[in-house]
Length: 344
Picture 1 (cartoon, rainbow, N blue to C red):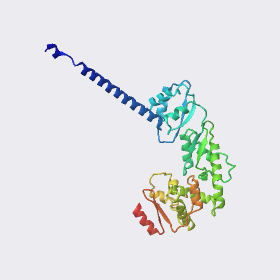
Picture 2 (picture 1 turned 135 degrees about the vertical axis):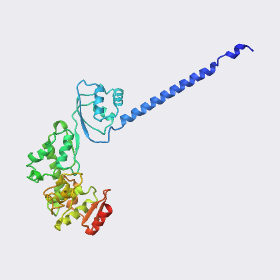
Picture 3 (picture 1 turned 120 degrees about the horizontal axis):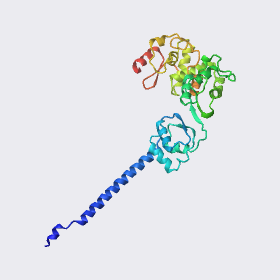
Picture 4 (picture 1 turned 30 degrees about the vertical axis):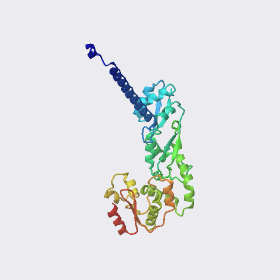
């Protein structure tokens, strides 16, 4: 046998290895590309935040897409600068971004955001005033949306001309409860705090006129009671029952005993109430003073107003809520004390 046969190279096996390496490299590349594409699709279709806050955003003249993406990321409007820039480039939107003022919700996708940035037309935004907010909290809401300077709404409640609304008390300290909670569409560029407050008062009048017109009690008393019910219970089925209990105490000349009024008097939204708070003879504190407070303690919604105007007639005189927010009712003080021991 020729000795040269013992030194021949396995050419076929080497080519097989090269092919295998190439296949592996291509496969890894395909996996990487697919992963990047999946990640990109996820990022452009996913909202940046669960929050619904509206953020003002100004695109400056001659600002580059990269600069815009950095500020969007810093404002919490996008999760990825890379995904935003890639989408804008693929859709040829980056050359169409218009200088102007925008208002974007935080729960927006990159796709929607980029599309909306191609137009700088003035936009209406939604101001949602939740049930149970005080006038001071409405002020904080509007200031947080940069529609007003802090304190402007509260000052307007006190001093603006609302003569066209005769139901509004002359005493500015008693003007809680009339600025109706609802969703209002406003143009940020032409927002005026007095006009916004007037829209709330108009909505209040429209929504409550029929209720107060057919109620057997005084409308002012109903509104004050509704504000307490709004704070004491957030479940529609409970509210007429709670209202019925509180009206029974009121008619009997008993203390209403509503912690919500004590919190309003003590200016404690969530902090623990002290013995001094509970015993304070502040006229707003129904834990220590009989009757209704001088005015409403918040701006109640329609459900609470309807409950106060049409309370449920039950045998109950007492109620409390456990740690899970479930209501427990009692007919006698002894039963109420049993509920306290059991649920609190």
